[in-house]
Image (tube, rainbow, N blue to C red):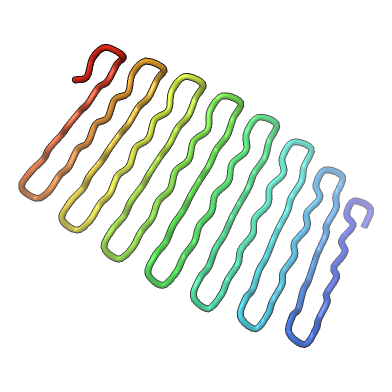
Length: 174
């Protein structure tokens, strides 16, 4: 059309079918590729604009589904991966800017949920892990700077709450 060009290519063999569609407009180019075999289906979509590039890949097998999305702008890159099996779901998100990198991982099973977040800047690294089971919730936070390392752990059960904080400097441990 006057503003859009679209191309689709399909390739079939005895065991694989692959389809790629590319769409171009004055401001956007998008490509989607789907590949199917007897045991796997995979789809990748890439979208580009003047300021953003985004890629999403989804892979499905009889027992697993995995999705990864990467988004890039002039100042930020973000990646999210989600993996699902019959018993576990895991999600990891990493975000990078010129001064900060942050990663969060969440894992869920029928009996446990765990989340870990790590943040790094030029002067600080901080990690927080939270684990929940039917009877216990535990959180640990560690913060490191050039002169101090501090760790706090909180554990909660139906009858008890406990908090421990440790701080270390070049001259003191508390």
